[in-house]
Length: 165
Image 1 (cartoon, rainbow, N blue to C red):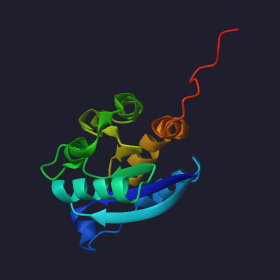
Image 2: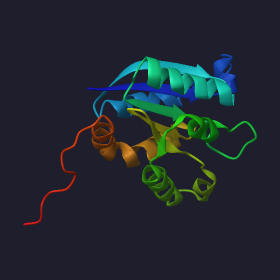
Image 3: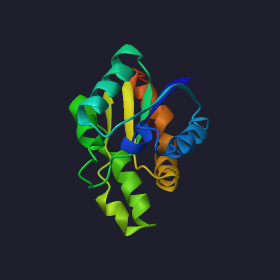
């Protein structure tokens, strides 16, 4: 079972001024992997706080998957991609590109998404937008690849493709 964590970036949510409905969408979709949610937190849009939280989840709790929501746009407080890049060892650009391409079919605003997907040690980190609708649309795109990606990140050395017949 994949051990997962959800981190919501929201200034208002972290102060109790807004309900976090995006994480509820993520929780529903995690069951499809299947993944067990072992940690959930809501924090302000502060680059160091985000980075420190991601490091703790990767290095101390050693979760397999971190799904973030919020802070991926172009607003002045949207720093989730930068904080994620501060801590990852390698990017997984195909997943982020796939989410943007699928979203672009629904809204031109997908062009301003700066979401990042990457790895830190044996943890896959996926940035998602902050709205429940965008979470559902974006996470559904990468969902079929998550289990395989986590297996590979954790050291599975089986061939990825079937041999030609």
